[in-house]
Amino acid sequence: MQKIVLRTHVGKDGILHLDVPVALQDADLEVTVTVQPVTPTQTKSPEELGYSSDFFERTFGCLSDEQLEREPQGELPEREPLD
Image (cartoon, rainbow, N blue to C red; front, side, top):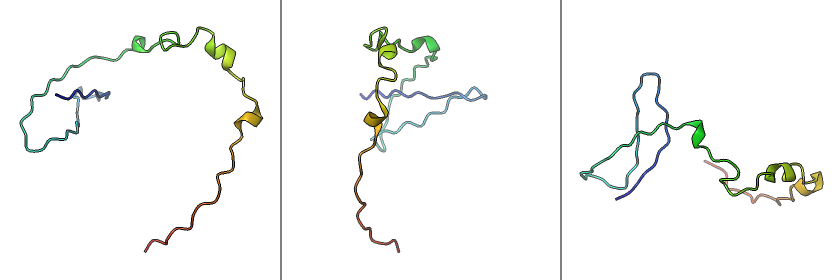
């Protein structure tokens, strides 16, 4: 059994369209669909994600511009032209 979790949107027509890729071909399947609305209260707080309550206040703006400079990336190799 394989559990596939999708997050999708129902249009104004009220019909849910699902495209679910499976690795099987020419096979009989039993499919169970559970519909659960997503509400904003399901988002986790910083504390629930493992951050301290003042993490963002303490770390916001702590890097100087010198620490954010991108290192040289080198030269790209010559590629064969497309025909």
